[in-house]
Length: 306
Length: 239
Ligand SMILES: Nc1ncnc2c1ncn2[C@@H]1O[C@H](COP(=O)(O)OP(=O)(O)OP(=O)(O)O)[C@@H](O)[C@H]1O
Ligand SMILES: [Mg+2]
Image 1 (cartoon, protein in one colour):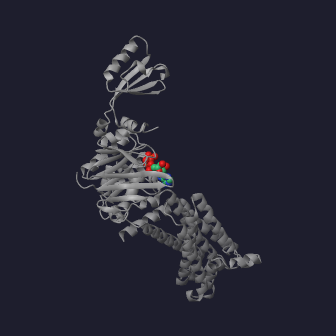
Image 2 (tube, rainbow over the protein chains, first blue to last red):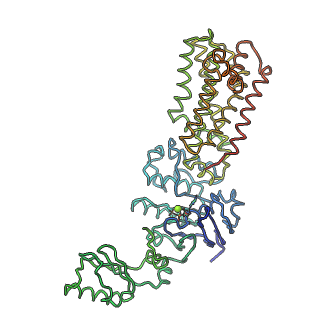
Image 3 (cartoon, rainbow over the protein chains, first blue to last red):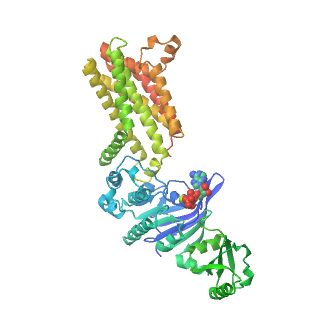
């Protein structure tokens, strides 16, 4: 690949005693959608806000568009579009007024009508921001990030709290933005989102990147077993995994069992036999392709969302 | 220039769309003007109008501006604005400019009502009053800014702006002559900026003083403003 458009070297950030970013290094390249994936408190927001100059790293080197951060931020800002995790906009201002105002801050900006259209806010352009729904507010925040036609778009959890349809809309905006030749860095704790739209993913946990690559690479690299999920009609406590020698690992949760195996077909046969002879009261069985969710579980021993 | 106009209009919209601002800055002082003007304490509108003018200044500069800064700060507005390529001091400066113009329109409005209803002097529209009032606006904006910066949240900002508002107006002789107050309070009032602003306006309209005769008044206003501003800067934060 070419010269990275965002370069972070050995970033450290403390909040008092808490080490929020722990010697993190990361390169992001031109025209890629990069996803920073991690559970609550992993350090995602801290990392992106250090890039944006909103927080100061305690150590490390950063360059964005070949300019050092924070020294040359003024120049970088012209080409940077940012959606913060939380933004409360002034309430008594109309959507279009806000976009026009923001467009005026930049040397180069997109036509407001075009950005309204992209964000699906054309119908709401005359509405006060306080009368927008949560999802519409989020799209307005995205629209404000797009107004200067930024080379780099940094989105902090752009789809959290949105319904599936709204989420898909945002994915589409991001994909189109990439097609227009731009680079996108986003954070998320939705594994599905990372798999769907990111070219590369960095899994972050406790301020460290613990895995990096394309979603397929990560899944392949872990050489994960397939998950077999089944539900019993009684509590799963009595389930004896020793009856199934092919099970490599399993979790119980109420009446549900998730078992992992590299030979799922054998387990299926045994499960069906157990069901048939009445030794195991199985209600449902399903097989699941391994996902980034499992990669995360494997790497950290924890679920990404608790 | 274009950005300045846009930003000014933005601030102006935010200000006037908030009905509370219209109430506190126009209706409330108007009500006091009509009430005190009719009661006619000192025998002349000139004992009433300067106090009302100061009330208008204090409510815009101290209360409205102070609280709105804290509100915007707590909502992360200034934080968001640090990502755009304009200085946040430019944004703050525009806000202050907008408030200044608002206060001048308030004063013109009150003076007009006083002229029509109570036959107040046209000298209230003069250059000398305008200049003196501008120093007063500086003082109260600095106080409002100080109150905002020492307030951890909006509730605190309400307390920290209301307290000096009432102290400066009531003890500073905005609503009644200082001479009817107990002696120890009169001695205390000498240290407040309000009597110098009120007294200054009265001298201009009643004894035809010019701005050059009011050096001491201006000095006190600047001193209060400067000290407040220096302290405000010490506690200043964008987020
Ligand atoms: N301003 C702050 N002061 C003190 N600690 C903080 C601050 N901001 C974040 N932290 C701590 O730093 C760690 C990383 O926080 P950060 O907000 O970067 O996580 P995140 O990955 O964005 O989480 P989320 O998914 O919840 O948004 C957390 O332990 C958090 O409690
Ligand atoms: Mg976050």
